[in-house]
Figure 1 (cartoon, rainbow, N blue to C red):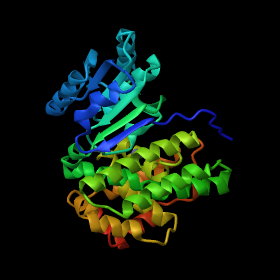
Figure 2 (tube, protein in one colour):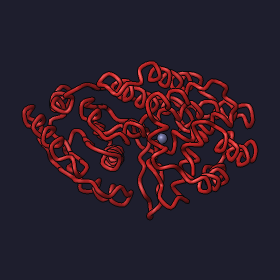
Figure 3 (cartoon, rainbow, N blue to C red):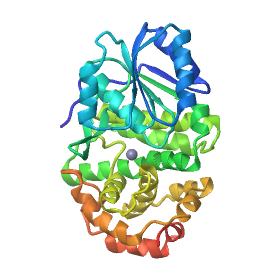
Length: 348
Ligand SMILES: [Zn+2]
């Protein structure tokens, strides 16, 4: 039985329009006046606004690091050169900058400020860092951010694909929680009820307001963040990751051209919910309402690659029982692709 006797969750959460211009205030209040600053390329105007806010609040940037390499080797190297008197590490931008900043702050035992500029998945509030080790992607134990700062206007201005990917990753919980309960009954995998409830709640919260507005972005960001908290409470990735994530990981390995994580997860969630015999079609209807199916149908997935991925998925993680472990699901998948009104538009 896993038991988490120390739970680390964000203390500062600011999800609002213009939050980037207040970053300096969020650092000055707890007196983090010397910081190391990790950021992604291609977001110069956002970085300029963050720098200005820090300057206005008398925050000194000791290290300023443009992150293009999300490897364990690079992060370790940055850690050895980190200014010893820095009070906090800030990561601004996409996955790589956040993963590297999170890992360096974990090694240095400094508070981490997670400032995502796009909401394409739930990794901005995660207890793990996704880095390559020797060229292979690994999830390394790390620490939850001390602060999560999301500027909802910046995220609202992102392209369609980011919006759909973020929703796809969030909806993964629809199948992940059922897999977790199946694993409990099949192989006695421990379930943390509070973490499962929290994950479920995030999905329903978003389903109540699936709008691409500042308010909808705020709900999406909060929901994705709470999945990270649920993982921390459970001490495992079970609340946020089940069969749908195994299929996505398998696709990343075998696809000629893997698609964005949340798009793969979103479609896989729907497939897996049907394999799990979930009878409520709220997910299919939600995806129809927001235009997710239409977006996927513009560039359909390959049925043969997905067949291979569904076969490979159960072996991706050791001791991780899901619906895909319960039987050979390929014949049912092939039938669904032919007959399901949504899926037949999304596969070729
Ligand atoms: Zn995910």
